[in-house]
Image 1: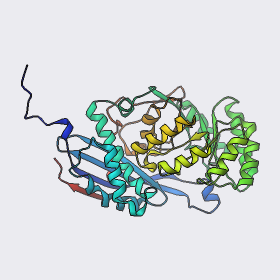
Image 2 (image 1 turned 180 degrees about the horizontal axis):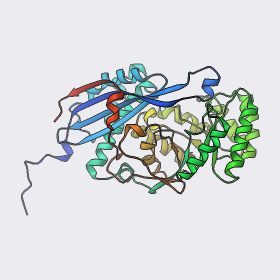
Image 3 (image 1 turned 180 degrees about the vertical axis):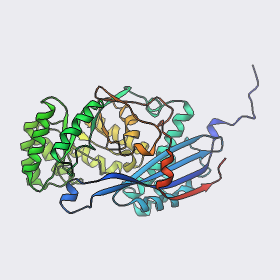
Image 4 (image 1 turned 30 degrees about the vertical axis):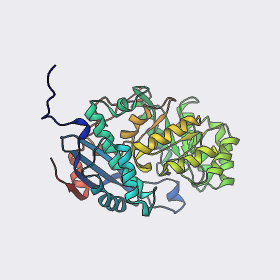
Length: 386
């Protein structure tokens, strides 16, 4: 028997040596409007604030993670990330669950949800990316994949600012790209416009093609009840966020009353908030957002609770991460197709026959594009790069 090589690093005792945090503002080609804009609560969205975390270890391993914010919150996430990042220096990168707890308690005075956990999400995703790359596996395979592709639907072509004729063209483009479902934004002040748009798109797609609608929290309970009743005629996969995102009781009442499934959860930013919806039966489809909830670590907890309760899952946005996570669910999930983040990365996801292929490259399989530099508003480095 050969003696062990005592000069080689112990893979169980690697340490985080260097972290770079970047605040990046990704411009959108067209200002985006949903029901929150039409009700005057928000302005059209013109950019997405991205928070990137790049982590390297003493032994030369690296990971890339990200979180994001829309319309507001980007500077706050970046500021919080800068404060808590030094807590990771010198830590073992494999101890991801313990490090998540350490980071959340480092900033616990501002809460264990919301902006604080969204900032943690960038670090957590980077650590999982690193662990998968170290193993030579995609993140999906590291976590335990159930499938190599996931059914997917497009949202980016169905916003309220899009004229009806263009909406129909967008559905054709999505289908030609191999995308398997279409989601439309609803929530117009005049509900007749919503009904006309959904009816027209349903006729254009045919009776069986998967179609969803999303009211972005802008209906009150009486309006939601009336609209859900009308929408029953359109054979929808789900009606999303018909009520305020924290109204678990109201969502549960709709889920009990109507055949069309109710979907919600994208705005929730902790396991506890998701659990409140799960225990009250507030969703047929739960829609956790990995970066918003704090990364892969809490997302997996939410997914386990949802599966135990018999719910379906359809993770929100960030398909570059969620295609891996959705591949691990025992029940067939949906992944949301948004091409908005594509300019940030050198790689592209493949869609075919209504499904999104799970990348086979190690980790997330992502590298930052050269364009990111021109959109970078701030950079912070801690530790010493190996």
